Amino acid sequence: MKITEKKAVTISYTLKNEGGQILDQATTERPLAYLHGVGMMLPAFETALEGMTVGDMIKPVLSAADGYGLREEEAIVPLPANIFAEAPAEQMVVGNTLHMQDQDGNPIPGTILSIGEEEVVMDFNHPLAGVDLHFEVMVLDVRNATEEELAHGHIHGPGGHNH
Ligand SMILES: [Zn+2]
Image 1 (cartoon, rainbow, N blue to C red):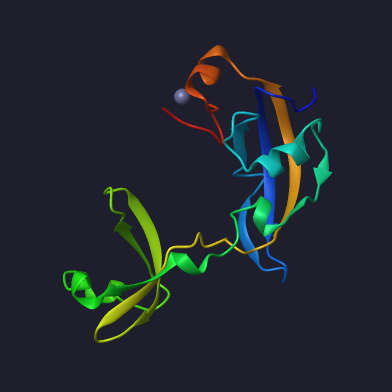
Image 2 (cartoon, rainbow, N blue to C red; image 1 turned 180 degrees about the vertical axis):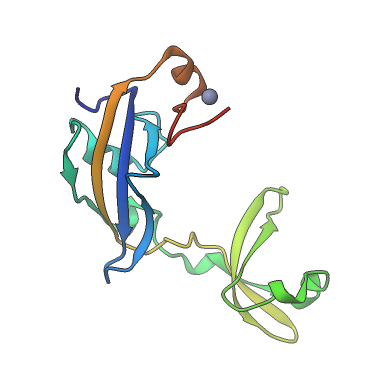
């Protein structure tokens, strides 16, 4: 069975950056199950998997633009240090990710770039923004999604949702 829209797809994968550093992975013991063609995955990733079958192994390379986007200078924001007065000291470390809120109260993760007396500079770019994504994907299973899975928009069972 080939991977097409609304198939339940189980994969193992390794994601590396240009330098070969492993950024993320799903092993064959703990694979990832997803519903193909509903926008769960990066569009370019789904395009690469389209038409593949069980046992296929592919190594798609997604440019940063096709991945998590390019890094934007506007996403690097100096904030007044006093708004961090309540933050636990162990959280206030350069490189640490804090969960902030945007103007509308939506949670938005940001990474601390620098900490000064007056201001704290936060980087709200996605951690993988500006990174070319080197995937190695093995197709472990392809089946038709159940009616329930289609209604939920995700896959149930191993590698998917358990509820
Ligand atoms: Zn569900």
